[in-house]
Length: 458
Image (cartoon, rainbow, N blue to C red; front, side, top):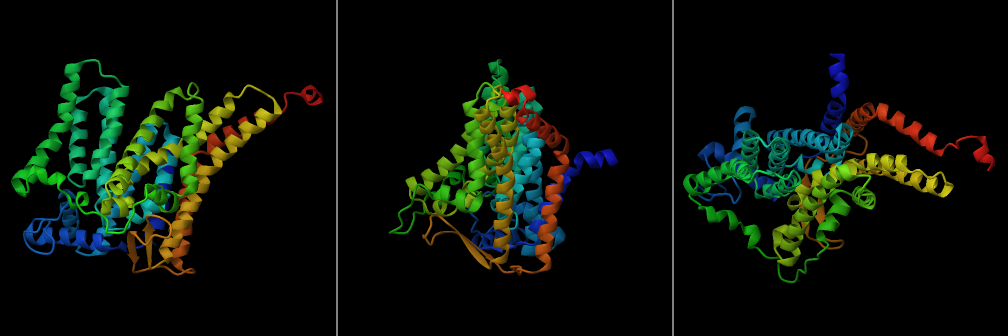
């Protein structure tokens, strides 16, 4: 039992810590949360996700509302009950980010990725908002996790399971399509040799989403398959006089979702890997897949919002770019390991090189921790405010708005709970890295220490 607890405490500490921090925030509400709450409530009454009047179907896929309605049926109908369900899916996302990070980069990187992902204001706000985005990300990550094993083992059964999970994600929200980017790139990387086998695997993956989409849109709801592409997000343009900036996504990422330190750490992680491709050949492809997924998600949002002048993609970057958050977290989480491997590979003993590599190692170790502290500090401030706006650009009064009807006070028990949550989270990470930190410190000392007294005299 002690060994089991010791092995699982790091992830458990992260989950306990982020739960304690989260319960002091929100629930956050706006027009979308009220609208989706109404749709889930009506499922209990009429059996279909209608809004406003009978027969007026919500313009979202249905699965999320049926899951919420079932939860309401068991535990009671209220917005607070719904937010508990969202939090549970959020915890599931944290576990899946850890599992995917462990699969790609190793256990320590997976744990750090889970902690970084969980502590972003982006994740904390959405995990306390009654929106279906968290469910979509959970099923998307679950699909990706199973898909990684399916691709490696070329298993038809696992491809079918991954396809069912993709269907669940797609029938929760259409943003699930971005999951296809890393899955496709991983498939190309493993280079399936048997073309016939490849088509059978592809069929096993696509069959569930095609079948369930046809059943819902064509038979059950009667909307028709074409309605998938007729969402009003793709037809409502910005009001006259609004000139969308092509940097509205970067404004959200730098100022609200991730923070400057987090984005800087992701950039440094990629820069180190690309500058020493031979040294990081084993993980270079995983970095490229993460980068390609991020670029696709951000690029599509920028094209829709600024290129096509569509209102919802422009103002709702917090939701449109959400599928990229796990991949940002993975890039930042692998940074410390990259820096220490880079330092260990340095053969020159010249003072300038030792100083350069020591600085890179120090930055690589500090940036992820600093970004986590900065993000938790910002999340703490959000819990104090009665409302806040994720602006599309500085000085522009447009973006995604939230109300917090239960803000906490500066000096309150809730602030102490947040500190306790951070302590649990930090203890989980320190416990996981205790042996590696000791080895890294010995390595750094050995690298910086002169070989002998003669070298000092020389």
